[in-house]
Image (cartoon, rainbow, N blue to C red; front, side, top):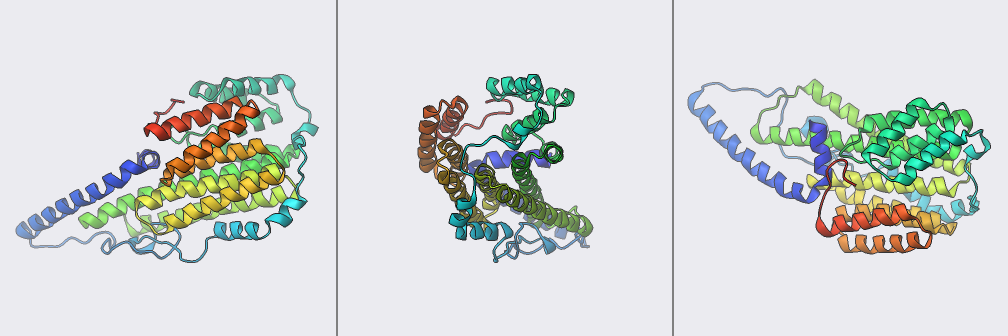
Length: 379
């Protein structure tokens, strides 16, 4: 249930900024009434399972840490350092990349064309709950490794927070990475690692939001149902998720550089931007200072992705980067800028007859204009 609440909050940031202050006032009033009644009629005190008093403060890179405080590190995060290093060496790196439109590594493998065509047919049908189910069914039945990898990549691309389970997608990414190792599909492996890094970051954000919400209420009412051991275990899990996400992005970048693939490297930084934008949402909801840092990280990673693709004159990948970043900008409150990026993405997509991108850009433009958030399964 808490996971569903976290996902809903990520999709309704504006509403959340109104709801949280109201809830705080309500619980503060209830807390005061409860304490007055308690002192009035009972001559004893209760001790919470651990200390939940005090205000949130900034001391590290996650929201909820030891002693029930918001933790925000003032030093640079690992991802910030990774982005900074790429910014400093961008020209040198892009000069070494292969800028020709070459086939994927898997083109050298034996491909079951009949099975692969089934994947392409589903892709052409467009994103829907029904087509996701068709992809998963095909994944379970096909023995062709190339088709399996492409199915995983498509399911990752079609991720929707309202309907998809991040744990399942991470497991699929792991399976895809193992398959990529078997057939030496290094470019696909790098992309899968980047997807995995983003899905783990989403898990981190959701757990961080759930724990922060629970502890925020506990601070207001002065009572916690969480033991110190349970609290410390959550903190360990949060740190583990944060570090695992970082590791995926670093490994993905390293592999993209090793194979000199601008497509893979640009995608890695596009996913770093998406992940940072997602983390911004829950940090901003709690008024955490690190939210601004995540926003700036998303913008820097976006620029790197765009510049990497520009170095190869790959306009279509630039258009997809515009589309993904426009989705981040609307969460930053920069809706006019988001709409302009979407128009640019559509203009490029139309020149290349990339119908799926045109449709996606139109849909996102409508959502920005109307503020409508679709239910699961509505595309």
